Amino acid sequence: MRPHFERLYRLAWRLTGQKAEAEDLFQELLIKAFGKTDDLMHIDEPGSWLSRMMYNLFIDERRRFARHRMQTVEEGHMSGEGIEGLPGGHNTALDHERYERLKMLDKALSQLSDEHRLIVLLHDTEGYKMTEIQELIGVPVGTVKSRLHRARARLREILSADGTFF
Amino acid sequence: MPNQHENQQDQEILELLKDYPMPEAAAGFFDQALVRATHEGSRRQRNRWLMTGFGSAVAAGLVLWMIGGFLLTTPDLPVPDATIPGITMTLEEPRTVNLVFASAEALDAATLTVTLPEGIEMSGFPGQREITWQTSLNAGKNLLPLKLIATSPLGGEVYATLRHDDRGRTFRLRIDVS
Image (cartoon, rainbow over all chains, first blue to last red; front, side, top):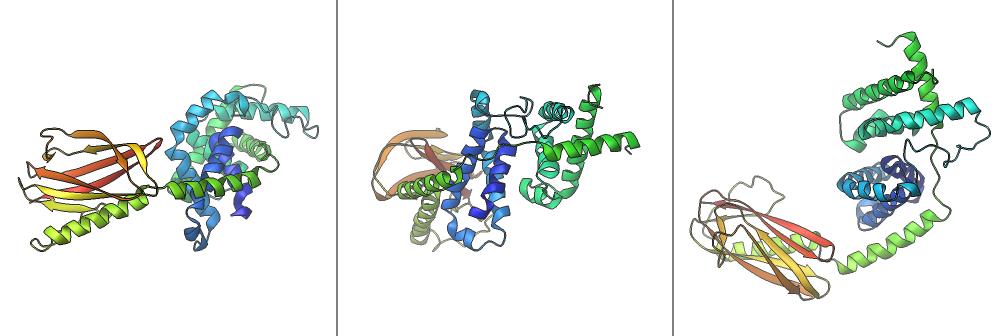
């Protein structure tokens, strides 16, 4: 499982939006996977299998994660809270204008629906293929494409409405 | 169709999204998570009286009952959902279903709730669709006989939910009535 940890942690982060919940979700996944090591040995693509298990775990316990998110929001980061606390937030390599744009993007992402935000982040930030997203969230590729299209259009709309961005 | 300006905006957004930051896991987090998972996974396996054991044990209980009292006299019926164990009852004829709970350890104050569909009653509880009581489980197999009576030909599903502390599992049993 170890080679998949980094990618799984990133998925946990993209799903939950903050550190404490990402760590909880990752931990729960490992515990659950512990009882299925026999299955894991016979799976061709354990990374996809584990990702799907994590996604299902997140969906099954979404209420729990949402509740925690409200209680511990200051402990981590969610879209729209600003990017100052994140790596790159103070990166001097980022010019000021780009940094400001990232802040605007962060705010705009927070205004998307959960579904749209997740697909944009998985596809455009994490580099997931359409088929990987299809497999992960269990909707047809056509639906993934249309959601991605609508999510990007909505981002453009939000960012264009703010005269400072474009 | 997006125009050229929109395409340019899309491109800018895509470039920004590629830079959208995310914190890395704390140093040692993966190692600690693995240790915790091993420990917790072992503990859960030790303590399990969970559905895997529960479901198969119940099924085993049903098989024993079916062989003993039912299959000899009634032909097999098609099973609508093969994942749910099922039995066929005769209208107004009491049948005992043996539920078997497997527990790795003795458990006090477990709560069992049986939910019945309309037209199926539990002997001693006429007209009640939900019956809850506390029970204790011994280590090993625990047999719980439920005496059911079909009062209408509707059939349906019986749910038996066992809870202890924050853990709980539900078993479904499909009942057809002939």
